[in-house]
Length: 87
Image (tube, rainbow, N blue to C red; front, side, top):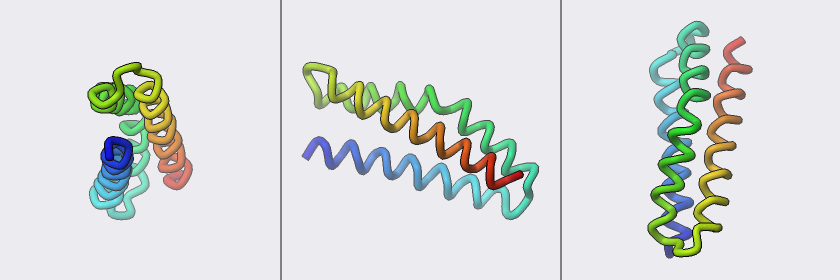
């Protein structure tokens, strides 16, 4: 049950970030570029937030670190893709 909650948390981060980016930019390439850079800057925040959230359910810490690294890297790659699409 805990793993499902953590995966749902990560999915909501990605879906919310992409929805906000495409809603705010509305086809404006300059705004989309700025928001892509913002996603790259916020990647450590996503990493830390996921680590703290998943550490609640993991006593050892290894699984929490794996989840945090996975979501942090995927969020960073998502920011790179947004930058790539905006150019």
